[in-house]
Image (tube, rainbow, N blue to C red):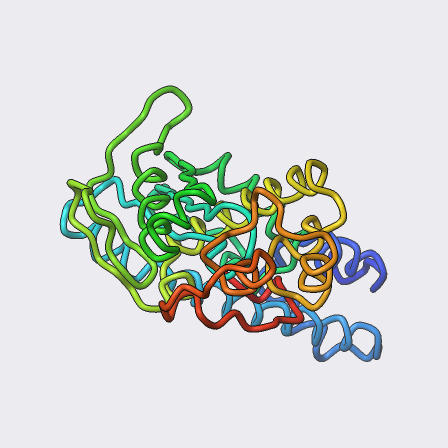
Length: 288
């Protein structure tokens, strides 16, 4: 320890704060009683990081509560499932399914709506690399209009489960955790968890996969149907999207069962609560 403390504060900072090297036993206590103000400030910053890391570790352990219960009951392949794209006026609804390794912890893993775009993209790549298996399911605009968005979302979820694949083969999960509901026609037992994307690591991972996949699709669709701003708002009912819809009319990927689209086309509204009200939103990133 004496040899360590002979290093300058800047050297210690480079190793233990900037370089994330674990502080050896006794270092923080020694820095806290050091006569140098910069040493005491470094100790305070290292203590703060310890508290943050401890809190994040506890959060991630709690995020595995449902999975841990199922692992203890003998279930191994636990799939989390979530969807993205319920609220938009255009584009498909996309679901993700993810089977995480046992006791998996990824720092900052959370509901995709709580993450910025760059963080979501990074986490999606990490999840795909780490997952035992992951899959994507899509329900197209025509299916949304035929079935309604609720049932189309369930269809996308079932397809995501059926598409679960390891690096070499498709798999069937032992148990399925779903955000808020359960999926028809799935053989595995299920549990719907209200706000599951904030309470289950597997569902949170699925929400990130679903959101990033759908966003990428909407960027591609923006090139096919320019002028609507799809790459920016991803099809959600923003003021810019309403203005473009009035100016350009409905494209083939606009959902004909949604009120604003029907109004542009001169069609009678669908008398269903799911479609009758389409709120204007200012921040598409906060939506499912």
